Image (tube, rainbow, N blue to C red):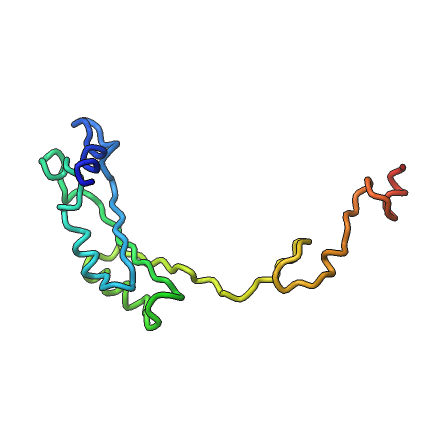
Length: 143
């Protein structure tokens, strides 16, 4: 697998299309994320051109993305504290937190004319009001 990855990211010396201009490192709050980020940030995870001297491995911009699952993740997660720990370790401008499953699990009533969870049948009994259907408005538009 590693050989295939290296071959697919190998490039000609004068181009940078197949080499990352930014690396997004993602970890979950379900794991010790500071240690995960530290391991992922090591240069031995970069493609081969960075190891054979063609490109400077320290010149790659790294962004750190912490994923937190609101329902299945740690219940005592403190986003401000986590961001501060990440910024102290990796720098102030490259750390973010993304909350997953953050919407309420409550049913949402949508008033769009279709029956959704929690709606009554009143919406189902409302028919189309176009001039092509016989109703009170159809007399204004002719037969």
